[in-house]
Length: 303
Image 1: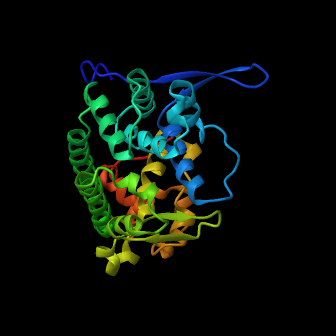
Image 2 (image 1 turned 90 degrees about the horizontal axis):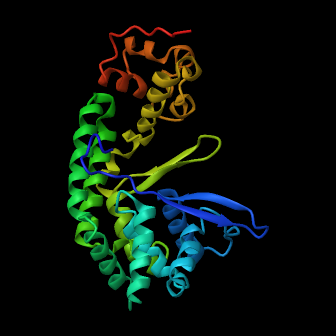
């Protein structure tokens, strides 16, 4: 990082955990711990059948008990600190810094909004300008995405991705407290409905690769042509280029069978998916292959 961004750093928070038998474990408290803890906190509020607490699901709460016990007893406040922390490039480190400053100042908020603003000030003093950084990130992401996913095969998926990224940014910018409002809302209440209307729902699929997806309201007329699974083509391309023969068979086969590309699945998908670029229709993997300018390259596997 220092070579690319002068003065840049990756902040990691390393914890030592001790179990009841006095065994010591090293644990890196980062984005996964914060996001899974945040998800657990809201699921626990809405569901009566939550599994037993464990890592990473209780990591944020356990750390709060150690740093500032009074805050650890308020799930809504922990949820808010997780939310703010995930807006930075070092969520685990940010979460700890916010808790530490609260403890040092003996600050106990009256509301999640007050806590949100306090947390942003703490991070700003350490060089994070959250919303300015968000805008730069959004612009950079869409620039790269639109250069790569510029093939006709990606048209509807490209429009969907651009819409949800732009809508997400505008939604957050106009109402920074929107995520905290989800915590205080009833399931599928007003706040949830607003977000679903603007962003739709993520694609979900089960062990049988049966999928379900809901687009934003403004794209409903084109919903059947939007296929978020196209983004998985990145995964397949990465593994093929980095792992070679061990990753030839395309990971998208079962998904394509259950999509509007089902008629394109053939033996090449298993043995040489890049060969499919010669067909009349191009699958998502091959469209990405062409986007990277690989269509004229010869594939040779080293021993």
